[in-house]
Image (cartoon, rainbow, N blue to C red; front, side, top):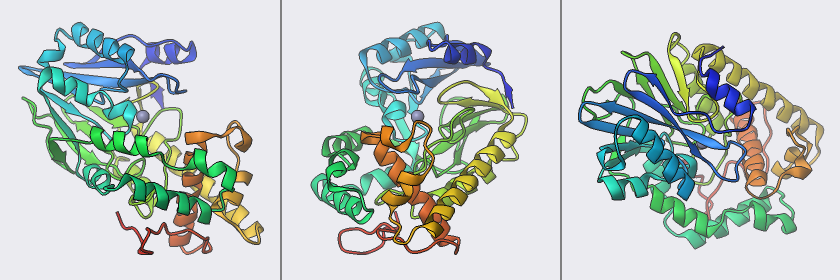
Length: 349
Ligand SMILES: [Zn+2]
């Protein structure tokens, strides 16, 4: 892997914001602050072509984030009102967050992956979803005094629904509707059910969102109403991009690099090694639950340090591995898997 974003890498190491940079003809990378998060910033990309200005992953909505994005647009020679299109690789708040604000001031359309819109629209009754999620946490063996922090919160869910109000649904092979039509959509489910990447053959750049990052392994979670086997989807999505050698990867976090195939293979082997770790624990425990397996897995800062959303992500990641082992024919049945909805029917997205 060759790191091409030298200044971004340096900034990452020094824990400061990287500069706004022109990374290819008409493409700018703009760091947008992600407050109170170890990722620190999202790299938004501006694609400025003729009369069009596309913003990919505008970033988390905060006062400073709006200033960051505005400064990036100014560096690219445009203003907020010149934005004609907004595209988010997935629905997470550090990607789609600022889309509504940007649409209000520019009138631009918002595009999301087809499967992402389907997934988000499936949540219709926040209170019922929350109750079902809590019930699921119990079947996963989460102790009663940890359920509050690990469960889905209603406000978050409703906020998410409001954010996902997209004008345009894009899918595999679609061309993003900006002047020169050089950006093609590649569906890469895994990190979220409808995650998409963008491929630009003429400029040899690949906008990878959170599907492939240079340093960290993106989280893959088993969620209600989501992908029934998200880890398998993620591995398949990594297979799909393996041939794209020679492209410069423009990720949504950290720094840009070359060596997409190499990194995709590395991410696959890390995921499979993690599944092996889960399988060994599964074999060793008499009455395994998602909770008992998660508590014994290796976590970078240790399981006891996990709380709130981090705890939830750890549990749903463990569940994703258990489900993957199960559908691979090597795992055992564990209570609460596959994820079932209130009426007991398996959720198939
Ligand atoms: Zn992200």
